[in-house]
Image (cartoon, rainbow, N blue to C red; front, side, top):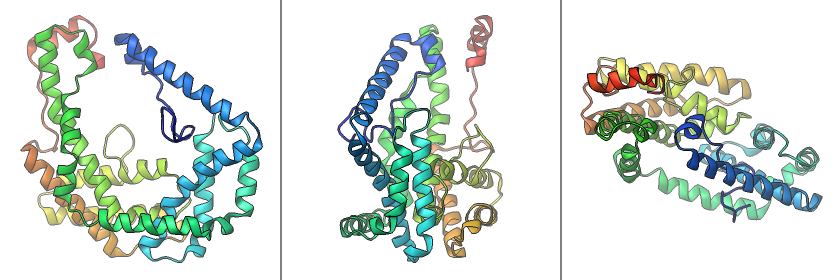
Length: 328
């Protein structure tokens, strides 16, 4: 499962082609669909070989999911046995979510055996040694400041900024160039603030405290990290809004701490996890500082933070007359 086209086959699968890709780039959509079909065939082949293969397959994924939560225990200095049940429930739920829709043949029986030997697993010397090494790597990673962190990702962000809007494939060349240029600044801002959110969440150890709960990573990411507007706002989006709407950095930091406190009460305290206030204050400081760095580098002047996108009358007329403005 680690040597396949997609690392961690099963828990991670090739994406399905998007509807817009099927309409505008059918060759790319066909390639995505074929890659997904090959991965599903390989997955079913592994799970069909018998219970030993299935157990080894699921145990590999369980250890992958378990390890970062054990590192989180180390980072916070919390007693492992006190949060062992939370962590066990989280790993089981992660596996159920990953292998839903008929992809989890033999998973239920594996989870029973995994539960009965869970304490033995987390006390295993090989796993403990791996966690110690990962803990040291985290300490090194957390020594990096926000500006250096963003600089390390600058090349990838630059490449994302250069990616064309899907509509560029069917627009006249001069209008396609306008659309691509107009959207790059907004993409860069969103990508960089997503990095700021992740960095602040991790370095403040707020991430470690959430990993001590039974919450799945997808839920944690949605409720604590995501900064986009596509769904109901979580902590990351509230923190970004605080930075964009506050008249000063101090006001933004105070606002972020209050939002973090409400999310801790809503999601963590019910599971016996209570981060120290210093963790929330550090999160606010890191997020606000990161926002200041990003807006300074991009020279953003719009009150909302996002650069204003203004299309020419010619482009707007073309989009309207060809009934594709809804895809903008």
